[in-house]
Amino acid sequence: MKKIRYGLEMGKIKRIWILDRETFSCSICLDLLKDPVMIPCGHSYCRNCITSFWDEGERKKSYHCPQCRKTFTPRPELQKSTMLAALVEQLNKTGLPAVPADHRYAGPEDVACDVCSGRKLKVFTQLIRLLQKRSSEVKQQIRSQQETEVSRVKDVQEKLEQEITELKRKDAELEQLSHTEDHNQFLLNYPSLPALSESTHSSSINIRPLRHFEDVTAAVSELREKLQDVLRDSWTNISLMVTEVDVLLSEPEPKSRAGFLRCSCEITLDPNTAHPQLVLSEGNKKAIVTAQHQSYSSHPDRFTYFAQVVSRESLTGRCYWEVEWSRAWIHVAVAYKNISRAGCGKVCRFGDNDKSWALLCYQNSFKFGHNDIWTSISGPVFSRLGVYLDHTSGILSFYSVSETMTLLHRVQTTFTQPLLAGVGIWEIGSSAKFHKPN
Image 1 (cartoon, rainbow, N blue to C red):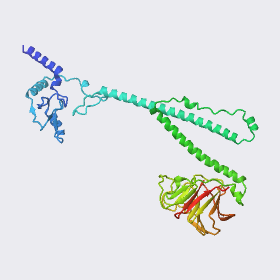
Image 2 (image 1 turned 180 degrees about the horizontal axis):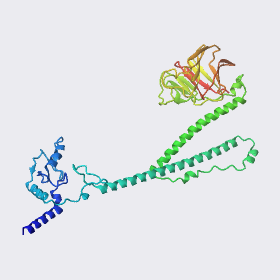
Image 3 (image 1 turned 45 degrees about the vertical axis):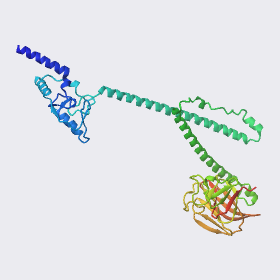
Image 4 (image 1 turned 180 degrees about the vertical axis):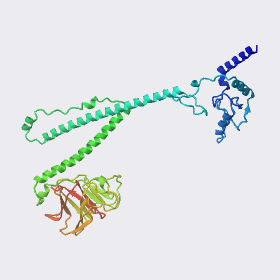
């Protein structure tokens, strides 16, 4: 009978172990309670586990139950749970097998619990793996969409470049047409000039929502800016090449006013380069210096210290223009576009650096300066100066103009860049006006 009663008791203990083991487990270490204690909210823990848990919160003076999160102030005294201690001790004496480790502890490929202080247990392994898989799918989708968009933009860019090439070809044909004097001969050479059709590529581009089309807009804008830079540089290079050919075939330097007039050109001053004390008028051909600063907008090309201004036009080939000046202390100059504009150093003032050549006009005399070397010039002083430039031949000449033209100074050098015409005015009330002589 004793054996039967013992067997029944063991069966009951086994059922308790299997069905209610969590009741006798510490929620911190997830093992059977060791020296179980009860806190005021009614939950039980191993004495060492809850003591260590609360020791970590000692700095914040915050003590709470790990299960129900109830907060206690001050730190409660731990009360030993006698009944739980006896029950757990009895369960330990039975020597019943523990739950298989495969179901409790984390393996090599599992995510370990960050709370357990002993062997690490499994934590949401399946959920985390699902999130990782979904993350990889989203990343791959983003990469695929990015590659698609880049490919589409490149395709649009190529089509636009083809259109631009075609438009340039048609423009060249029209340019040739405009210079043809013998129209009969032109009709024989060009029996049918293709009509300028509308863009076929642009219409085939699908208009997508604005957030997707922003990349295309940016690409087209960047391409347009690059083409403008290329065309600008190409035009300058073409002008220089045409000038070189023109020099080989051209006449010598003019010897009469009529010869200079055949080289005359229009000079317009650039307001974005004018010093704030300079007032431009008469279609930006005249500049006068005043004591009052003008409310010009900030611009990187503007002279900030010296009262100077340069032209809009870049000068290459053979050019001639005249400057009418009043009073005194006026620089009539040519300069490279990259002459410094900001500050009071010699790198900014006409004639004081290697990027400019200037004739300084006094009331009764002249001085010529380049690279801060100034030379006194003698000659008749009239209110009008003539400037002759042969860029490719490296010739720069200044003339005093009245009924006749008197050479004041002639420079023979090598110009490496296109030049800008300019003036510097140093006395309040003095002025300079550019003329294209007839």
